[in-house]
Each structure stands twice: as structure tokens, then as C-alpha cells.
Length: 136
Image (tube, rainbow, N blue to C red; front, side, top):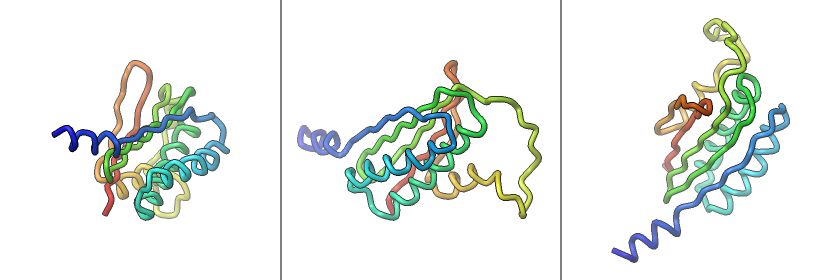
């Protein structure tokens, strides 16, 4: 039993970083996270999906939310959990549904498509959007 627990602990990892509230945050954080995921030896297809999910969630924070914001990655075995927490919506934008020709508004759809599970938690400190990705 102890050997099994030790193996799980060795395979568990976490990375947390603040998200600057600027458009350049997406590319800066992507580069940083790419290195973290490589250090964790994540499968290449899972790492690429994770980078896209992270990019979409960070873009939503920069465009639609109040700072401060934070990215938290948690890995247990082959599973990866991505959480992006912010201080809540900047303002209700009254946007209409996404039309097929629109260039924006598909981020959460992409997150949903690439994730095994995803969701949103509302709490006193703001909002956390999360996604869990699994190796194929």
C-alpha cells in the first residue's frame, strides 16, 4: 500500500502562476506552460490540447474578467486539470449568440470539445473555470 501511495505522490504535480491582465499574457503563459508540461512528460497530443484549452481560458480572462487572475495546473498520473481563476466579470457584455461567420465566441466550445469534463465555479473571490483533460 505504501509503495502505491508513493507512486501516486511522485506522479502528482502542480504549477501555479499569476496571469497578467494584458493581451500578451496568452503567448507568455503558453511558452511557460509548454516547458512545464514537457517537464511533466505529458503525452504530446495531451500537451497540445492543454495548451489550446489554456489559451482559450486565459483569453476569456483578459477580455471579459477583472484582475487579479491565476492559472493552476494539476497533474495526477496521465490526467491534467486546468483552472483559471479571476475576480469576476468585468461587465455584462450583452453579446448575442455566436453566428457561423463570427471570429470570436467559440472559446468555451473549444474547451468543452477538448476536455473530458469542464465547468465553472462561482465563489466569493470571483470565478474559476476549469477543465480536465485525459491522455488518449
